[in-house]
Every structure is written in C-alpha cells, then in structure tokens.
Length: 440
Image 1 (cartoon, helix red, strand yellow):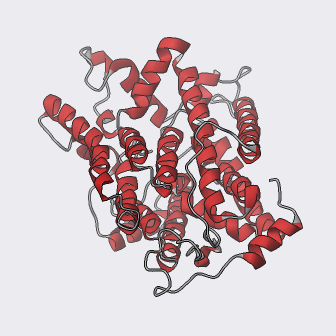
Image 2: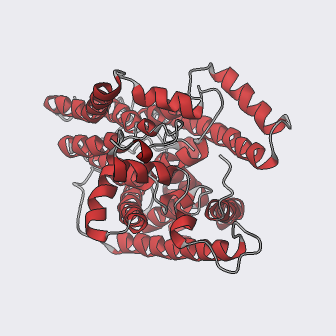
C-alpha cells in the first residue's frame, strides 16, 4: 500500500437538470471559463453532463458553520454508510478469522487497523527516528514516505482518547463528515438543488475504495482540508483557501497538486476580480513539504528522503508512462502473480483509464484547474515501475463524483446501473480489507 496514493430527486428536479441546464458558451462569449459572469451561463462540464452555475449566478460567501437541510441530508447519508461499514467489519471478523478453527474473532483493533495504519501508528507513537532501535526493527519500514499531518493529529487526539485505534477512527469519522459537507456544497455550485449534493456524496461513499475513508488512513483528513480549500477558492476566499491547503500539504504530498489547481484557478479569475494582491498567499502551502524535507535532511542528510523511501518500499522510481502501463498489464494478465494480486492490478488499469477519461472531459469542458489536479495525480501514480494505489486516489478526485452525479441525475436507470456496478465492488473491497486479504 502506498501513501501516494438519495434520496433520488423527484421527477421535476431531474427534468430541471436534464432540460433546464444552460448550454456552455463559446470562448468568445466567456473569456474566462473558470467562473461565470453575471448574465452568462457557466461553462459546466458538458462531457460529464455537469452544468455550470445558472445565468446571473454569483458565488456566495461560504457558510462555514451553518447547516441547512441539504447539509443535514448529506450528514445523515454519511452516518448510515458508517454504520454499514461497521456492520461489514463485524461480519468479516466472524466469517474470516485468521485461523479457520478459531472460536473467537480477531480483536476489533486488528480488523480495522491494517497496512498503512501501522505506519501512521508507529510514527505517531515512536516518531520517525526513535532512539530505541527496537521501535523500528524492520529495515523495510520506510516510514519517511508518509507525511506527518495524520500522525500529528493522531498523537494529539490520543492524549484525549487514550486508545490509538479509537483515535484514528475518530479522526477519519470527523474528517469524513467535513469532507462530505464540502463535497455537497461544491456539487451545489454545479448541480440543481440539494439532490445533486446528495447524489455526489452517495457516489463517493459507495465507491469501490470507500472503506479507506472510514479506517485510520489519511484520505479523509486530506479531503477535510482539500475540499473546503477548493470551495473557498471558488468563493475567492484566497487566504482561507491557502491556509486550508497548508493543512492539506501537511497530510499528503497530493496537496501540492491541489495547490497547482488553486494557482490555475487564481490565474483565470483573480485579474477580473482585482485580487492579484492575494497571490503571495498561495506560496504558503509549499511550506509544510519544505519543512518536512528539512527535518528529514537533518536526520538523514537527504533532502528527498521521503521520495527515496517510496522508491525503496513501493518501487516508485520514474518510468515512462507506456512502460508503467505495460508492466502493470503484464502483472494483471500475464499469469505471473497469484490471482488476488492480478485482480488488484486489473483494478489499477481500470482506475487509470477512468482518470484519463475524466481529465479529457474536464479539458474539453474548459475546467482547467480540476484537469490539472487529476492530471498531476495520474502523472505521479502512472510513472512508477507499475501502477499502485490509483483506485484509492479516485477518492480524492471530486470532479469525478460530481460529474457522475450529474450523469446519474439524468435518469433513474443510470443511477441503478452505476450502483449495481459500484456497490458490490465497495462491499467486496471492504470485506477484503477487514478480513486481511487486501493484496495491493
């Protein structure tokens, strides 16, 4: 594993999205596609069926603490899916014990705490460079590959909670709630009414890798900063966006891709709104990676120790994109690996195709900032020896879930088709994780 890594709307709402969405204007009508001007329809995402804000729409200042009915619906849906995952974990513990002759299930902490969680736990408990060698006995530990944001939050919350596993789950629970609220509000900038927000959140929460939003991994915490940062940027709250992006880059290196998207969005919109003086704020998110590199250099003499740890542990040395695709294809279909590993690489290939198609549609729709964000993610994950953790990365691609939400809102059959594809995969992957059979 790598770190670099509903209610259905009523018929009237669906018809409003399908028939009432304005067409995207041409370049001459809208010089700046990133934000609609008064009296002009937004550019939307026509390739994904995602309309932009309607005529005359102006971005409203974000309501940070006030929850409306749509927000409460999103949180209710989020809590229902958390209960579903808890039930899945309970059943997996009883059905798939490590010992087939066991009469008791694994401890709950073992069921939910696997793979990357152990890296975060060791960092939070012992630090990156513990004085006691016994605290880091494995020469392949490579914990430097993991950015310090999640371990710092884990260590801080552990002082209050007292149990490491409970602290990790609580971080993901709260951070996930913040993330889905922000996703719903971003979706409402593009889609009609609260149905669009519920739909985008639903599709994220039943996506194949959704289990990683519930366990002690860094995806939920990253989204809790990244999505509000993007929402703030859409409302031209650049200082707030920059400060939230600082937190995002502390959690994952993917935060730098978010910063690139923010810079592109700033370049497309700031001159019109007279906000060029805000530009220096967007340099702040580079500070956490620089400080982390400095910290690692002080202990190892290597400014890129986090990158080299990824290379040692997860084969993330640079290879051309076509070589990476070829190697992953051979691993998936060359019958050289056991079937669980081969299936994981098949999923990697599918996720890469989904990412490429999404990026192309975003470019065609002139959603340049979002296209940059996903393209940089694909470049980072698609130029290693082979693909790894791309399905998990889809959790961080908010334009994908908003675009799919718009597509499914065009007819109930589309939603049924997507759920019949995604929900079983989500359940299978959750059981695979909780039973300790996750291969990639």
